Image (cartoon, rainbow, N blue to C red):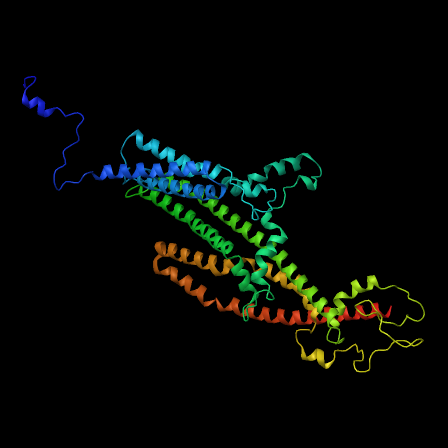
Length: 479
């Protein structure tokens, strides 16, 4: 035994109030201590960001809130990989074995880094701060509410209680869906008169204007393709577990059962988000293209009224504006003006008293196009082209909205399916791929043939609409 107060007992007792002596060549802190120091610094930084979201200005608050959410989600992902992921396996164990401290930390990070960002409503940010409009429920709904469309539940519930829902009860239009905002945003890119780009097709302008929306569409289609393959993989692994009795299994069977349930749900959510983006792009494109076409049609009318030196070259513009001109023209103007043609400016041509006005001999009126019309291909069937731009061509843009399916989703799904079949069947999976590749030119030839027929059909349709319009214009002038 060691006597009380001896030197041995004094050496064994720790000296209070003094740090451990640092030996030369020894690290100041251990690896575990450095990790704790880093976590303290991280949580201090996130606490400062949380204070900024409350006390700072609106613009800085938005940036700080997004940065805080991202950092907390990254921290949750790290702890989930270190401490939660091993729980679904037979071969791994949680890394941070600190008892209840670890699970309290993981629980708090799950709450602030995953749950709260999903259920907290988003801050409304108007597209025009100088003239803010009332927000739409879509703009302030939380992420979870937006994904599940629960922000529309009040409207649906109210509509179920009445026989007819009044217009005032519907949500207001979002500010980024207004036509004025669409023109301000899209006209500099799509209108060739504002920013001419020779040799660039109109479709490339649309792709550049909505590049971020199409990038989000690619992401959601990738989610759908990946989760569409999770179900067969989960079923294959579950059957393998039952066949072998769990021998050599890495993941627990409830993981595959959960995958059979979650994969279709998450894949459907990704696909519905893709449909939401594409449908909104279609509505925006329709409004934008319609405005651009009618604005250019009005410019054609203005040019016709100003430069009226060539009557034959502006027959198409006369047809477009004939209805508006007939409204301002009296139906009966007396015996002397029965055969008089009113000019676009509203003044009849001057003529000697008692004589009917006549068309100048240098430019006689003719129902058939003159040589000047035949020289300009841009003025040929102009009214028919404008009509087809609004109806047929705009409809073709709508039909091509799902081009990402052919350019991204289908190749990705084929690649993932071939990889899965190769893991199961071996080289036999490439036989089906070879047949698929060999038959690819057939749809291409059919599409080329249909495109040729459609181009010819559009030419005939333009000519037919132009002929009907010219005929109606002549009948109106005769009356």
